[in-house]
Amino acid sequence: LLDEERIPDDGAALLMSRALSPGTPPSDAAAWIDGFAGAAADGGLLLVHDERLRGLVDAWLTSVPAEAFTDVLPLLRRTFSAYEPGVRRTLGELAARGPGSGGPSTSAPGAPGFAPAPDPERADAVLPLLHLVLGTEVPA
Image (cartoon, rainbow, N blue to C red; front, side):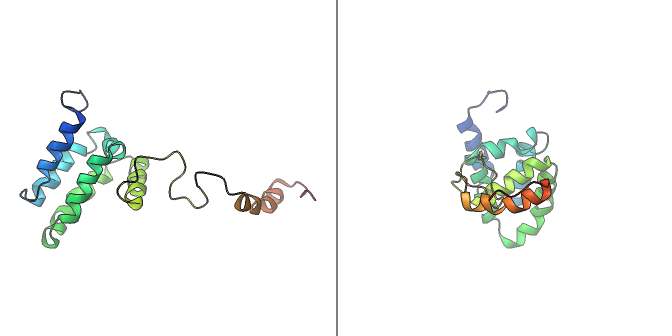
């Protein structure tokens, strides 16, 4: 329904918040996530690009009681393992950044040395190795 624009984006968040409410048994909620954001549903791209929905999944997952967590983990693992490797990597990076980090960034998140602006000192540090690999002279 969301893909066909038969419900608004806010409608999807409302449906997800209801499906993941504390009154819903954890196994039912995990099955709902599988149906909503599983591989058949654009392979997780919805979660990559919609921070609200990702936040709802995160809030639900952190609220699952310990005794139920081991029951829902296999289903969630199956759901997320069906995503393309790039989607899984991006979701992992977004999860590592935490809530409020927005969507995918234009830099290479999580990779050492990448920032909004170049770091001249770090860039200059690779020049000797680069000259060695290329077989060129190091300028004086």
